[in-house]
Length: 249
Image 1: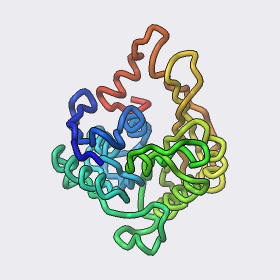
Image 2: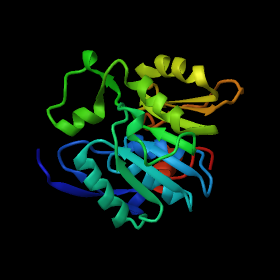
Image 3: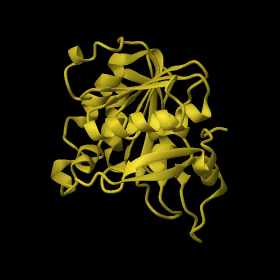
């Protein structure tokens, strides 16, 4: 695998992120997920599947004094994410550890159960039966799950979420029915935000969040349209991508 890296701008250059030139590369999904997380100053946050760290770095850039833990099982991503944390001056706020999200809970001795205010993730989108495998190894790890992936990732999130804590996932729209079923078993105040690549096109992604032990009903947010018919980026989306603002800011 090529170890050539690029240094890419996020949030209009407010963040500089090292990424493999050939391999998993973070993009709009990571920034949109960060903008959907309703954290407040001082929250204890956990990212499952930390990757290069873009989601947590965007979140930390928007909200001061967060304490963030990341879990990542790919050795190359761990190396790069630690470099990104240091390069963007967030070593005091963000720490990342090696861990298999689908592994045994006994392997997570470094964090306490039911202790996090915010847990968020971008789980692998596709199951193996539906998608030909990427040639690149860490692209495969990031993109291809199995029939148990979403269930296992949500179980880990529930294990570490405190009562009243929020869990937020971004995923492919085809997995919304499964996620909605899983979230509804343990979470309330569920919010669904579809993401449309272009106006008048079908949604391709969805952000879903829920609050542990809440009894509030499900609501659908207005969808995010990433590109207008004329090919231009809507002002709200431009502000999200360039400034890292929250959905409701």
